[in-house]
Amino acid sequence: MAKPLSFSAFVMNTASHILHGLWRDEAGNQANFNDVDLWVNLAKRLEEGGFDVIFFADVIGLYGDFRGGF
Image (cartoon, rainbow, N blue to C red; front, side):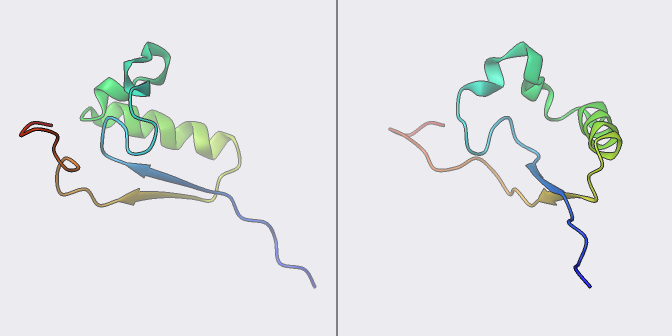
C-alpha cells in the first residue's frame, strides 16, 4: 500500500531567509515578519490548501555582516 503524499511548509521568523530583497514586495507582507497575524494567516492558507505541516525554523539573529553592518 502506497504512503500518502504529505505537504509541508518551511518558514523562518525573518524578513527573508533565502530570497533577499523580496521582503520589499508589499504582496508578500514579509516586512511584517514580527506580527503574529502574518503567521496565523499563513497557517490558515496552508491548511485550506491541504498542507499537513508548517515548520518554523529557529533564528537567533541576523546573518553575517558586511563592512561592519547588517
